[in-house]
Image (cartoon, rainbow, N blue to C red; front, side, top):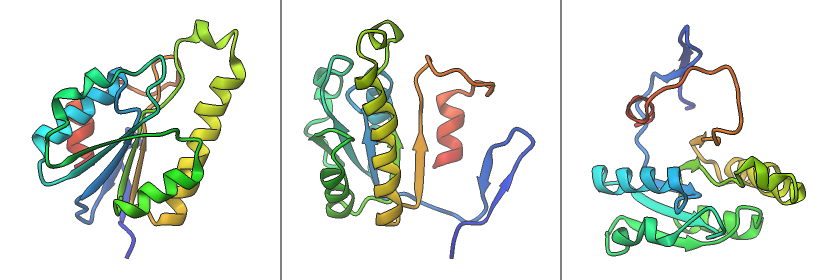
Length: 166
């Protein structure tokens, strides 16, 4: 049975049925924001298996998560979100039930000289993840965007977001 949801005045869906993730696939987990979330989840939720998926490009650094390499609930996989076969394989092999998508090309100034790369990763890569999530029956997909994408959403703290997600 699908989770029953209700929308609050702020537009945030609240899950009425209890859902507990077991295997979380985090894209961009060696980047600045993603690595902080990976650290928090690995340390605070040892019952969750965290699969950190990152292509290790200019905006990520394996040193951000190096201290986690011996954690029992942590696995790092180097890969690109545009690779649909690899993404689907990881989702199936690790029995992923939740995706937290942080991977993105950022730094607006860089996009002026290489806009196709930005479009490929940010749009096509997200599409690949959504398609794989659909085909693999992922229960929850959370997309976190960079600060360079502006919308009229209120800012919420990471703690507030995590309390709603888990």
